[in-house]
Length: 369
Ligand SMILES: O=C(O)CCC(=O)C(=O)O
Ligand SMILES: [Fe+2]
Image (tube, rainbow, N blue to C red; front, side):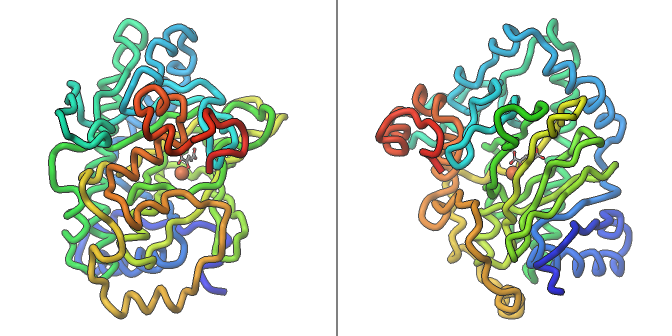
């Protein structure tokens, strides 16, 4: 069976990539197969501090969601033109349906605001400072989570070089989309409560960022599923001491479809569950706002394009997001994606974009994606 019709998700051992040249070659070859055919992998033996992850998962995350509702609402995403902050359950849409999850969105890198100047495009405002609970509310959390984000961000940057290498390109090739220092990567801390009105934790979608590093923070819950080439939903159960990595639409576009941006979704914990599911995705999303990642940006080696052709064409899936990479700069695509997921925030901070996307006003079910 072709690995494009995978029935489980492969695990790659990061220590192979970092120990010696022969083992690195082995890693690169495994990564090439995953990039072209699967689009999802578990990565084990990463350098991210295990103690930090433990404290985040078992201590801070439950306490973060356990804060009084008033404290959480104080840092509501509605306050933020950067789409950062707290979203109550039911405030986010995927494909026009409510996602039954409660979440905090945090970005890396910005302490102060960077006000727009006359003539700057609106999408310059998508990067900006995060909203954290105060030190009184959750002492030590900001420092710990920022340390975590710094480590995962460094890992993602190193991993992107392995991706370039696996695609037969010089290792620094994909760095060209991340040149300035003016960037923000996005991360979320998510709680999926036991099933509410529907089991849509998050609906079928592609990610936009080149890479996603997901920490599944509740070992007892399945729920994440990825779609193989035949369209079957395959479980991606939690696996201890690993990250789940998947590839997004920007990487798919820029590699002319060689890399699979794999459609995925999350089912909420079923009715008989005793606990919610927590997860922490980190999106290596902070591309330079002005770059284009359409298919003309990189020259792909012919032998690599051949692998894409041998894999075959992806069927229609339920996921249709981020088609704009074909014609818009990265900053604009990011803004459109965020506005579609959070129309209330868009209406307040980007009224023109809101009107363009939702000419009939605030979407209810089945209107947006
Ligand atoms: O919660 C998860 O496991 C995945 C979340 C996800 O796919 C996303 O936020 O893009
Ligand atoms: Fe996702």
